[in-house]
Image (cartoon, rainbow, N blue to C red; front, side):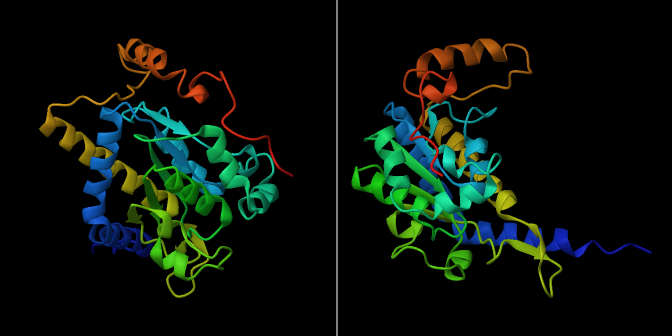
Length: 254
């Protein structure tokens, strides 16, 4: 007898298929926008709060990832040393704007903002302020989660984006058990998959153009340290978070 596959893997695979269907064209558009920016010597400013910071980690100083990436964030939204504070700060007005003001993005830079619900002031302000500075925004968010979330702002993250990657995360994030979900959050799985698809599309586009965008190499393979040393020298003054040469934003807010 062949044992049936567990229900959770089936639901995750269905969500991945949903993401492919919903974000197909946007994947290529995002790849094109990012490659245009990097080729013009721009910086990709990446933001998120709470558990969306997992996606910021996924984009920054990552093997195979773009080197021209700067994380912009307020320490107050980091949940590992004060989880309750991180929720409070994400909902407070003015913090997102201050983070962008400190980073001062400008064309040809691009911003990528991760937020599953896209309804809290912090990610919305980051996107709104970047757009106001002429910096196009790629929003990685879920329309379904946004519609089902408490509205804490007059607009959503998607409202300020040039490109929206819909991750298809359900309201509440969790998917198990199917009849009454209470565990097994999927936002990080879907967000990481969406970002990997963007990087793959960017690589294909770069190959077609004959371009070679700056990308990190794993430090655990031969020659990796040498490749990365050159990139560190190239970007350390524009991405101070690479070497700890400067703060990324305001001090933590209580």
